[in-house]
Image (cartoon, rainbow, N blue to C red; front, side):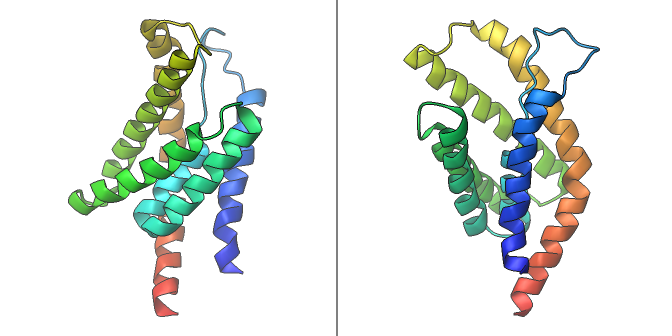
Length: 172
């Protein structure tokens, strides 16, 4: 049962991500700002850091594909991005310490890389025509701030759950 709880937790993050984007509006900021939740990426990174690389990459590829199928026309953008980012986080954690501040910094960096990657692909295929300055000020900075706040809020419960799960998996 515990083995299937983790994918359901990421599925819950996927559902919350799409619901959050449609239901939550911040009244203290202009409607021009776009806050893009990347909750699945946050969970994939936490799983990669605190559990293991394989589960992080598999869940990243699976939920990236699910994101591509549900939300966009081009299959492979998020499939590739989530899996590769999980792998790069794994490689970075071989060098860096697993302190929560380092993980939060890597989360912000990963969200920024993902946003620039998606913007670049959309710009190349002609799906967007906003300038880099508009993208950075109206989408990237609000997205980074939202995901950092969410990562700070969920980091300690997720870290404790995943370390407990890793300990239980090593005992079995």
